[in-house]
Length: 365
Image (cartoon, rainbow, N blue to C red; front, side, top):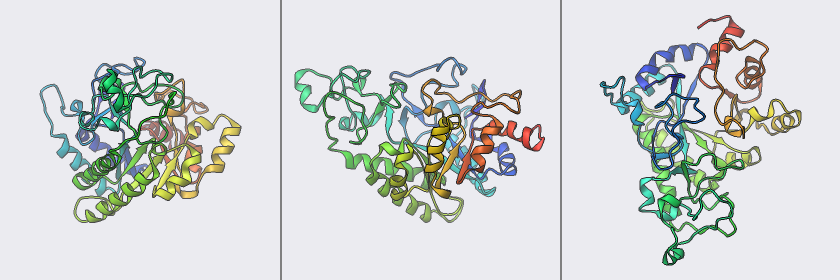
């Protein structure tokens, strides 16, 4: 959670912004991953865009799905804060303003040193060369040959959009859409246990903190059977915890990141919203026509900067006050106007609203 390019914001520091969010019409707050991340193969400075300590590795290289990152536990070097209590209080205050709180749900991959890898090595895939598509998958039988099946240093990296960019993450074996290799990947005999683990994770954030839903990373790469079971179970949990200070209205909203051709399958699995690459489509007439043709009514979410779909730039663009009114960059007011008027819901990165307010409402806040 970045306040600006030189500092981090924890939950107690974010609270004062809730009134402004509500005032400008925001009714759901999606928070990027704040979980503890692993150390193996960790990236420390991505393209030198972030100050040291502000971006320590991919936030999607999750070490503990039911934790809060250590860097958020301090107001200053000496002032420790119980972030579990702070986050619960933040959710309560968001609910009092009618704002939902949505978290990232990362099921396709973990960190390479994910603790359960020691107990469930079959949840992962292994190669001698984890950065090669030509290196074959290893199986349990290869252990007797001295090959590193089960070794966390050899857990396969996700191959997404044609590269191994997220090299500090380890691919989970969902037996679906796995990285290419010259041989078939081994089965995961503990797939049922993996289902149960991730359903427990989602239920934890709903039952313990009253979280209102999840944006599901790479949802199309996960079996439909998992989503059917997970969404049903979590929505039941949300309904159970409707009373008191928990979920805003007794429901849990599920949002799928997906390729547009998978949208119907994900809707059938129970997703409330799906989104794809509006960002990639806006400046290509053919792609934009295909994108607009794929929008599924009110169940589509328009994200103004889906930067994962940019092969040359994986980072969100900076937001500056001096962007010209006719600028056509990925965070321009014109870009937002298109996203906000398409069918469905619109989502934007924090900070972009400053320029939007300045251009459309004459506000300088």
